[in-house]
Amino acid sequence: MASRNGGSVDGKNTESSRYVDSEGRADNCSNNGGAGRLTDYVLLPRGINVGGKNPVPMGQLKAQLTSLGFSNVSYFGNAGNLFLSSSMSRPEICSHIDDLFASEYPFIKTYALVDGASLLRDATRLPNWWHENWFRKDVLFYTEIANPQEIVQTVESMSLGDESIFFGNTAIYWAKRSKDTYRQTAFVRQVMKQAFYKQVTIRNGQTFEKICGVLRERAAGKG
Image 1 (cartoon, rainbow, N blue to C red):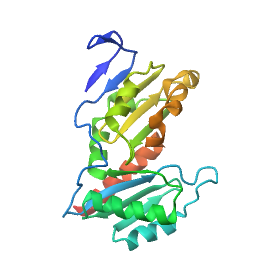
Image 2 (image 1 turned 30 degrees about the horizontal axis):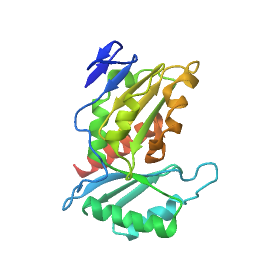
Image 3 (image 1 turned 90 degrees about the vertical axis):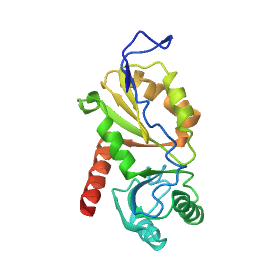
Image 4 (image 1 turned 30 degrees about the vertical axis):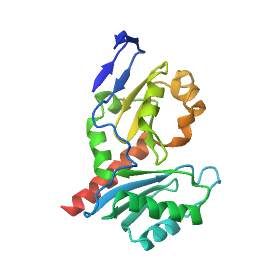
């Protein structure tokens, strides 16, 4: 991990508090996953059950995913934080999910399917500043239609305010320091205007921690 704390990096001026993880960055949506072995995944549909729009009953979705052959399907909350296990290849998993969403929930245009082990590795690599007291922390998960490399390049070109960024393998981790300066951050002023905004699905820091906790419990149960 390289930290950018102002000055110049590779001949380019940078803003304060920018952090980049250059290890293992990959498109989380196009590899073969754990074909042949049972692998835990997090499924994060984008934009469901928001303000009464795009309603998806979580219990119903759980039952539908189970009927497709996924095991240990669970969820928490109403915003689309689901967990499943499968020995299918990643393309097979995505094919089943794509067909389900197309037929039952056509308003779900994309989703993140995150390998649980990869997400927990991201969690262990987070810089110390992530665990400090921030006004708001958000995690921008790469969805199936995302091009992570292009998204990272776009975010790297932004002028940051009182905020810090960590580029992980599965998501971008974005922390905003103060309520007073929140509205002046690049996260607020620029992200929603970018083409990549519809290629990520966002969960706040508390939800991220809860997701990691569920994954750790599932991993411990296999031991």
